[in-house]
Structures are given as structure tokens and as C-alpha cells.
Length: 406
Image (cartoon, rainbow, N blue to C red):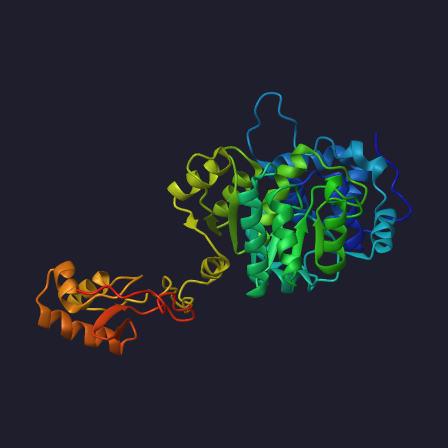
């Protein structure tokens, strides 16, 4: 039995047809994507209304995969959703929330989605002022556990803020824990952030993050592949991860247990040829077990935003400036001078003979070394007695202490 073709249907209106297919097909439906590519969104939708059996046969031939026993046939369930399909209503709802629908070929359609192949969504429902194409030109996905530790939340916020300060967009899923802190850090840093959600962009999920999601919609961008009013489901959460990975040049797992959604996102990034980084945590923490697993499997160790920038740099690009450890006051000393420097007291002053005994060197050798240390501002002499000079910027705590004679 065929369904009646609705009055709004126009086979030449690709945008409305894709809006309809985003309600008909579940996220990640590869068969639907192949059918749309083969027939076009409008003709495929007309076939679903007028010749559903023929369309299922075409879907089966295009799909070409051997199904396991009990697995639904390609296209099963599409007809059952036709009564729910009202794309004009969905578009009006989106407009009321200040959103816009993106389809392939639009200027703002993200080019990185090309890597998804048949898993590319038919359309994206977006809400917010940010241009998606510009935002994901240089983006990192910061993901992790919902049940995050204070350590993980602090790191996520720091990485989010540090990334946007370096011109990197932060992409995440607006969930509790690491995702939320990454978004908050990005917003605090004044830069763009993109939240990819598993429900309609008119809904706030989880409810506890409603204010955060509303702020992202005002200052960044909320993105979904399902129409307004759609509910989040486990399957949609799983499929959402592929979009997070695809929109980003690299995925960094900040904190994650051995099994978590963040690990799925990291796996998607690997399958798409993206870089993967992980933040190390305490070796005793089960909350970081997934990160440590990724590091053992070859993920890049990430400890700050500069290392995220390095991770995003294309092969052959100039590397980020090398970062050395904080300079020590005795860097560059030769071995003799270093031995004398180590022998110099911090809280008192002593003579050359006492220093020679402490350093295990002859007196003339120690005297020559003291002269060199004095020139470098590392040693101070007064009345024939020597002590270590105070560090730059620190008060001299020895100015009124009694000298110790050799």
C-alpha cells in the first residue's frame, strides 16, 4: 500500500527533500545515503511514497551486503516514518530558533565530511551565528568522560581556553563532564565552539547543561543531523561521535575510562585518518585508563594547548617553537664552576678554604671559579667571605645574617 504524496512535495526542491530524509533515516544509515546518491533526494522520496517495494529492492541491490539472521532489510522502517514527515514544519521551527539548514553544496557545508563517504548525513540542522566552514577550518575535538574528576575538568577547561586563544575552534558534544568544561573553557577564552548534539537543536540535552547550550547557540554553533523536536537515543549518541571526529583535524581525549563514548570518538578519528591525542592522568585512576590505553596504542601525548596546535599542524608545516624547561640559574656552568656553586652556602657566608673543602678542590681553583660565578651574578663576596647570590627578583635574606669564617 502506497502513501499519498503530500501537497508540499516538490521533487526539484532538494533542500526540503533532504530535510525530510533526515527524519526518515536514522543517523548513519549508509543505505539511505547510497540511495540518495543514486536517485537524488527528491526522486528517492517520491519513490518511497509511490513505489516503496521497488525502492526497498533498489536499496537491497545498492546495499549489496550479506545480512545476518534477524537483521532488518535495507530500507526497513522508512515507510513507517512517512506520517511523521513534515519538513516545512521542521524548517519553520528551525527559523523560529534562528537556525539554518545546511545541505551538501552550500557554502557552509563542512568539506571534511567528504571523509565520511556513505555515512555523510543528508543535512545538518544548525543554530548559532558561527560559520561552520570557517569554524572547522582549524578545529580540535575535546572529548571525555561524563563522570569526570576535578583534575579532568580543570584540564579540559584549560585546553578549551588555550585552544581558542591560539585560533583553534573547540568541537565537543555538550555532555556533562569533559565536554561541558571544554565548551566553557572555549567560551571563557572568547573563541568559537561547536556543540554536536544527538537531539534537535531546539532542545537542551542534558537538561543540566541548558544554560551552557543556550550560550553556545548565542556565541558559537549547535549542530545536529536530526530535525527539531527529535529525542536523543543511545544510537544517536553513538552516531554523533562520527560527526565530532569528522569536523575536527584532531581528537583529544582528556579523560576517559577503558570503555566510553570518548573512546568511540577516538576510534572514529582513526578511521577517518585524523590525528588522535590523549591527556595522561594518574596511573591509579580508572577515569584515565582509556587515555593510557590510547597512549600505548600510539596516540600523541597532550598536556597543553601548544601541543594541540602541534597536533593540528599539517605534515611539512613549520613546527611550533620549541619549548624548553624553565631556565635554571646555573644553566651552562662548566663542571668546576658548578661544583663550587653547589658548595656555596645559601644562608651564610664562608671563606675560600671552607669552600675548597666542601667542593673537594684546590684553593686557587676555587678562587678562580668564584670570580667567574661573581661575574655571572651567582656569587656575592663581602670581607673575603662568599655566599650564593639571591635569585633575581627575590629579596636578599642574608643581608643581616652573621658571617661564618673559615
